[in-house]
Image (cartoon, rainbow, N blue to C red):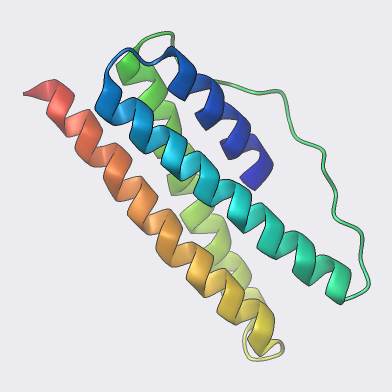
Length: 123
């Protein structure tokens, strides 16, 4: 999830001609990389090995609206997944839930930022 978002956002930021959404997308890509690092650390700490595989990348349609819509959709999916994971883990692992809640808050902010950029395109 975080790997896919990072790669999509970095590529899309390169192609966006409008500076504001491009820089925003780049900054959010960096956040996603940080999330990936936090999750990787947790996995290793608990004796696992992080999986670095991802599905085939979908960058959205080849215009600003398409990029932003795809990015909004990725954030919306991430919010749902993190909410589900937090619910499933419950009180059994406070450290993991704490990390996931922090990431969830950032994903909600990212989703809002992409939504606001999409709304500006409609004006």
